[in-house]
Length: 120
Length: 106
Image 1 (tube, each protein chain N blue to C red):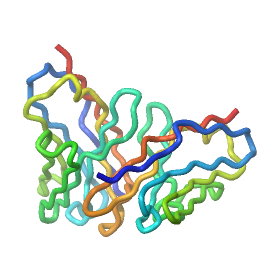
Image 2 (image 1 turned 90 degrees about the vertical axis):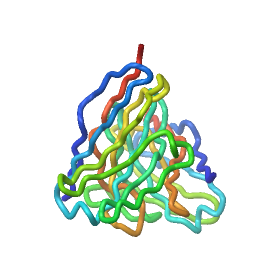
Image 3 (image 1 turned 135 degrees about the vertical axis):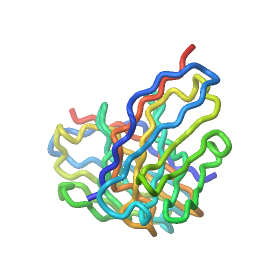
């Protein structure tokens, strides 16, 4: 069974950078896509992008292209989501999630979420 | 961009059947999935590939998808089913979520 464990809550100021993580365990990390999903306070789920650690193939939602960077480190079976310059509007819970089937992007496994607060 | 539309809220009495719809252009040509999210918790997959239930999901959850509409049906709704529900589809290397529906059991 796949488990996704995310890094802890973060508080940053506008303009600062940030990298949050999602540690994968269970089955082969390189054979599972890992996606990132944003949930702003009191709002719905928004897909940000997805990466295939096997070859680092990465796809972004047009809404997040250029705003964040998704990466993965196979050696430690961890995926990352990073910002170079945070804005207050980036305040949200961020979930990593993974499909069981590499050919169908529905998300069987979810991390516990990382709360990011951006405030001056 | 591709959009999925859900009603903001649905109410149902305990023991009755709840239906939550998700509309999108030619959605029936894609696979639809559904997630349940309770306050303070991560989403949980309850239906995938239109009508399949993951292990551990009660049989009262079912799904269908045809034309422009996917539907999540909860038969014999229980108080514990009160939650937000999101539909999701994917196409052309992009994933889309619906806006979510708050299911109230009263």
